[in-house]
Structure formats: C-alpha cells, structure tokens
Amino acid sequence: MSITPHLALPLLAAAQAQKHVTHNEAIASLDALVHLAVKERDRDNPPALPAEGDRYLVGTGGVGAFAGHAGAIALFDLGVWRFLAPRPGWRAYIEAEDAIVVFNGSVWRGVIGDTASFERLGIGTQADDQNPLAAKLNTALFTAKGAGEGGTGDLRFVLNKDAAGNVLSQLYQSGYSGRAETGLVGNDDFAIRVSPDGSQWRDAMRIDGTTGTVSFPSGLASAPGANLLINASFLVNQRGHGAGILAAGQYGYDRWKAGAGGCSIGRLADGSISLTGALDQIVDVAQAPALAGASNFAGRMMTISVEDPSAPLSVTIGSNTGTIAPGAGRCSVTLLIDPAFTGHLLLRLQSSGTTTFLRPKLELGDSATPWMGDWLDVDEIRCRRYYQRVAVSGGAPAVMAGLGQRKAANLIDIPYALPVAMRASPTLQTSGFGWAGASPAGNQIGFYDPASAAWLINSGIVSASMAAPASPSALVLRFQAAISFSGSAGAVGQLQLGSTAYLALQAEL
Image (cartoon, rainbow, N blue to C red; front, side, top):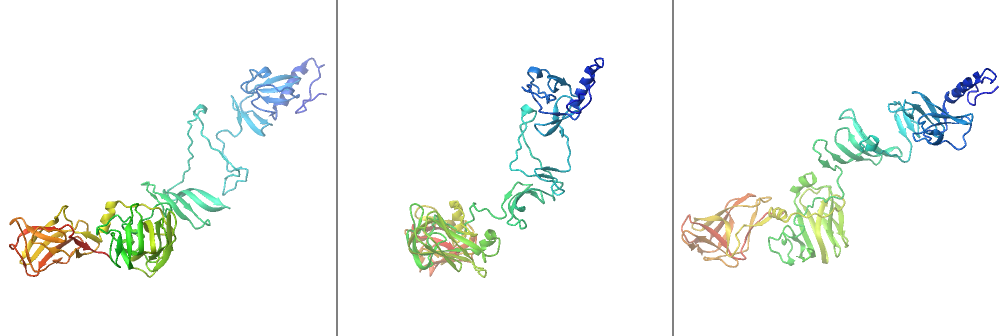
C-alpha cells in the first residue's frame, strides 16, 4: 500500500473504480497542508531540481511554472507543480528562516504582527522582572520609515514619565556601575550628571525646564574664569607713567604699584610688560562675595598666570609664594590661600632680572583658563573707584568742571560731584601747584571771576584741602590763602589749571 510522504495516509488502489484519483489528490493535499512547512517564501522561480513533496510560498513576481500564482503554496507532487490557495489564518513554517508566518488574506507576514504584546522580551539574553526588555548585542539601528514606504521620513524616540518628581533618564554604566546619566532626574530640568563610583553623583550641566537657562554647577574648564586683577592689560594710566622706575609703594599704571625695593616697569609696543623688581596689586576683599561667594578668600585655591614669560617670575598671593616658569603660551602656578587670611589680598610679581610677559590673570580654582579682556572703558571705571583725577576741560589752561565761590577773605570752595563713585571716601592729592594771579601755565592754578573779569590774587601761600568730610560720590574742594584773596566776597568763578597741574582723589588699598 502507498502512503503520502508527510502524514503517511493510505491511498486507494487504482482498481477501486477510479476513486483513487480524487482520493489520492485529497490525501496529498492534506499531507502538504497539515503542519505546513515550506522551503522558502517569496520564491519567484521554480527550483531546478525539486524533490517530491517540496513546498514553497510563491512571491509576487512569479515566472515559469510559478507565474500567476502569487501568494499560493506551490507543491511538487508526482513530478508536477500543484498550487494550493491559502485561506486567512493559515500558518506556515519557513525552513530557510526558522520563522513562522501567517496568511492574513492578502500576504504572508510574521506571526507576531503589529499588535503583539509581551510581558518580557529578551534579545540575545534573558529578560527578567527588573528588566522585562533586555538585549545583548553589539550594534543596534533605528532608521526612519520613508515616505515611499508609507512613513514620513522622520524618527522620534519618545520617553515618558508619570510626574515631574519621577525619573526619566538614560543611565550609562561600566561593569554595571553607573558612571553617567542624562535626562529628567527628579524634576523637569534636563541634566547631565556623572559619578566616579555609581553612588556619588555630580551635576555637570543643567538646563532649566522653564527658562532654558543653561548652568554648569561643577564649573566649566574651558570657559574663561573671572580675573580678580584690575587693569591687567596696563592700558589705564591716569597718572601718566612712562616706562621707568617706581619707588616702593609708588603707583604707576592704574592699580599697580612698586613692591618692596621698587621696580622698573614699562608697557612695550606689542602690549607685553617689561618688569625688573617687585610689582604689586592689592585685591579688594569686598569683591569676595561677588567673585567667590564668601566674605573673603580664605582657604581658596588661586591660580596666577601670564602669557609668554621670558624668565621665571616669583609670585606671592597673600602670604604664599610660588614661581611661574618661563615658556610659551599661558604659564601658571596655583597656591592655597591661608585659611586664616581674611583681609585684602596681595598679589606680587617679582623678577630678579628683566622679564617680559603679557596679560596677567588671577583667578579662583586650581587651573588657568583662557584670557578674556575687559572693555577699556569698563576697566577705566573700575580703576576710578580707587583713583581719579578731578575732571577738567581740554586745552590750556584747563577749566575744572564745577563753579567755585570766594566764601571768605581767604577761602574759595568748589562743590564737586564725582563722575564715578569711589570705593571709599577719598583723600586729596595735588601736583604741588603754585597759585597764579593770572592765566595759569605749567604747574599753576588760578581762579577767574568772569563778573569782574579778574583773576583772584593771593596773599600768602595757597593750600588745597576738602572743606568737609568727603563721601565716595561728592566733596567740596577748599583753597585757602595764608592771608587773603583779592576780589569781593561771594564772587563766583572758575578754577583753571596749567598744563601739568592736577587735582586727584585717591582711595587705594
């Protein structure tokens, strides 16, 4: 008795009134379709040497014997190809792919379909309750579905959390220990944070979810730090210092004075500074709250740097000393401020020989950051908080900005509002002028009464002072003759200065 190749069903003999033909065909079909397994799917051309019982799912571009049978089950039976039309819900095992497909009425597709739901899914590894979706692989690809495939060409990967206080993040691990995390960690601000051990975390960057403001809570190494020095470019020079010697304690370029033993200093044509000896700047401790977030600089790491030093520079910050080695680019030394040091901060640069350098920078922290200069007018305003010349017009003689009055026989008072408020009530400095009873020249000053068209003549030496205690923003200049001034009491006029005469206000540290 003959049997079918797959289910071993018995076949009727030919002698049974030709019923065997129909019966055998039915049995062969059952053998082909029950527990359906095919060699391949989407096959467009018949194989050259098929074996009896071989089955294929015909593709959409069938040729030869497969032409016109797209989607059908091709069965090689008794030396010829038979084609069986599938019904919706039929399933087939694809031997070449080790996959199961299902016919949905029009095409064969994966048995999972579009709406499959899994409690767990592991790819190359075992999923568990803690990680219901787990994958162990070396590469992964997400690519957008193009418009030609019915998509939009876009790809958006959406992650969602329940509430602002929850965590929505991507955690990066090394040896299953966290090292970095990005996302919305406990709030709706986007953050990047890092950890050396998986337990201690530092916020590296945070973007405020409401304002979009970006902050770097742990600092930004490549961004220029604030320079605690004023006039670090040596461009503000109200005292008119030329290259040369300064005695100890004498100011030259604004905010810079000679240290112990004096110094020789000058600004060269390329902007570099030539220094021999000790050069000081005192950093105002009143700036500590704004720059350091504390009442003083005690216990802080500070870095002093210069560009292109030609020789070693000895450095003092507070009571600590170090050396900047010569070299190209920005060279630096870092010092720790004594925890007990709470006053104004001394910075001293000292060279035993002549050293040239550019753009000194004193900053908080243990590393030097790039230079970023201040606007010249901003630098000058900052300098004027410590020293400023009384404002006068141009020309010679120059006219002081403000009218004066002969208040008594030997007194002339001039109220004066400072263009820039000083850090404290100033003291008065002068050029050591002489009084002129006429238009002043050189280091002379004089007082002109336009009402009488006369210059006030002094009797006795004239001294300058402030009539009342000054404030940081206003004062009254007083000129007092040892005996008297000519003119009438109450006369109003102008103070005029010769080309080298000056009045200055100082509130240096």
